[in-house]
Image 1 (tube, one colour):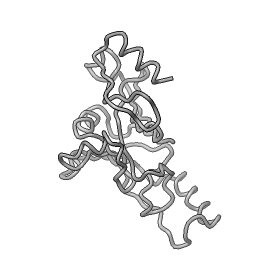
Image 2: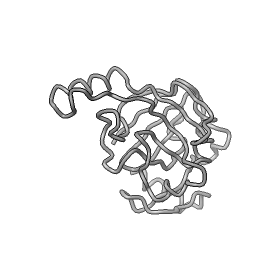
Image 3: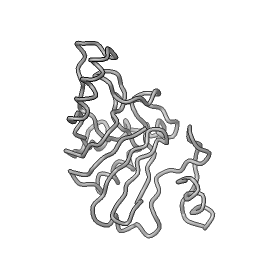
Length: 188
């Protein structure tokens, strides 16, 4: 559905441009915003990260605001089960801290693990899906790439230890848009 809307914008002469092929769709775009959104989002914002489409979407009080391409921890795109699995967690979170980072440009921490994360972790241990001595992990956030390595986003190269990675210019823009406390939904 979203692809149809993007294609319609492209055909209507918008300044948006299709630039690459995504793993799960015919048309893939770089970061884009709704028309006339240059002044920034209106009111409260939320983030929805779609692992299947490799997208981070921002919504404000008017609805969809912007979409950015992202990559994750590993190619399985599975939910995080335990520390060290390099999976990106799924669920509802919020931004709990923001900082400039010397390697990844900007880092926006999310509150993983949450109570729901601990409950999934407990159930997985109970079912024997993960070792009894496994730890849940932490330190998950949204950040940029290594310097001069934005190409990993263009090539859909999942490289993090469970975080969400964006192009450096995109993470800088996101950093200015979202405040601490912004809700984040990560889903497959």
